[in-house]
Length: 273
Image (cartoon, rainbow, N blue to C red; front, top):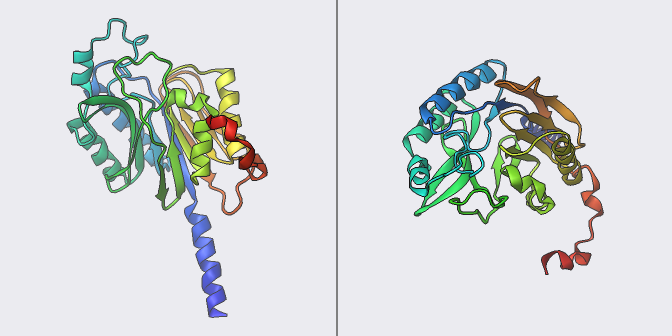
């Protein structure tokens, strides 16, 4: 009987751990001005924390203003872009890490990452202790980021709230990327973005959540969507202005909802030919 009670309590605790509050920050950064962008991030992260957020996500390329895109920055020069990029332990990122620790939250920010002589379009997630929980490099682009090296990995991290994965902007348009994360166990996909948004994107994000049985947070300077694993929008932004969007989510336990259980992988060889 004691063992049964212990198992029931452990199950209840696991379910409780999978419920948390996430905030999507729809913030438009200033190009090339990391100080101003960090200051705005700090203001809105503190507001989101005061409203109950445990996980806070800022858009793609937020720290330096997504200047690595040639449409965003006509005449972009590699030397200047490389100079604005930071290593994972760079001075502004140490301050972002300190903010995560101060607020005791998971905090994700997009940034131009200098790594091994190359620059990547990355999104780092700091944990509530201010340590790097994940650092994902964008793997797909629309050929409009001339000086960024494309990433090659799709990591899924384990947190006390469940397994999470990350995609950045254009990554989301390829169905294989979300599916890989789901197959690796992710129950939440964080999608910081900058590019297109609107009705088609809203539908796409709902489908990605439904078809993979994952919760999903799409975080863009002008659009935020927090979606559950059935494709239902739990929260979205109110107008195109700086704000935070808050939702309480409960990650699924056990069998994944949606159509994935009907997969027949032995038939899908053509996908990788």
